[in-house]
Figure (cartoon, rainbow, N blue to C red):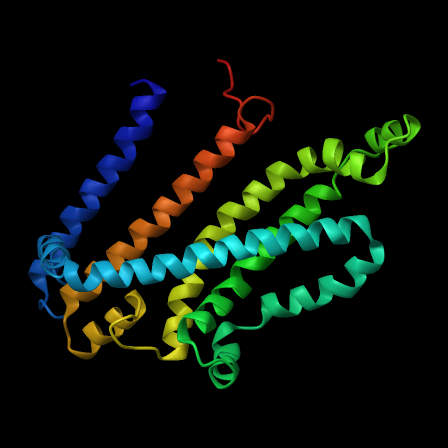
Length: 259
């Protein structure tokens, strides 16, 4: 088989095997414990009027948190790369935000913020923010010192060096952080909704999962989980395509290797 056909056949075969094993396990257990793949797909179709709007709510929070993480992370990374004092003043607190569990922050924000969606957005942003900041800053500081000396020799200013040398060097790092932050933003949006205990008609998939578990509706639980998994895969694929599109003409990580 050709390498391209092999890349398709192996995951497809593994997926088919997983479905067969899932069906066998579902047949041997109770439906409320492990529903069959067919019942999950049927529930996904029948309950789309419930799960679809919830998916849109979760997706909106995820994408907004990712957008804010990109804006804030890149801006602060540039500021810290340009000023050592700014890095010393900001970076430790960014680390504190990253290592503090959002389930511990959620009760505080519930008291401070009345709007539920804003609170969930802040919690998701906290998780997605640091990968963009950390990776972009690492890229900006990874420039070859010989090239920096060359720019200084030719009299390039600070912002010219940033634009023509540091920013291109940091781009692969930023795109890697973007792929990480995309998945983390989705995870954080779901975990934040669980931690905040939100509910109602305008709630996301986390609330639908909670209610399905409370009523022992296993097919709906798995259908919601399937939607979350597909959404995470879609975010990963889209960010990967963006990275390859941007880097394919010049960076080694995206240039196909010749046999």
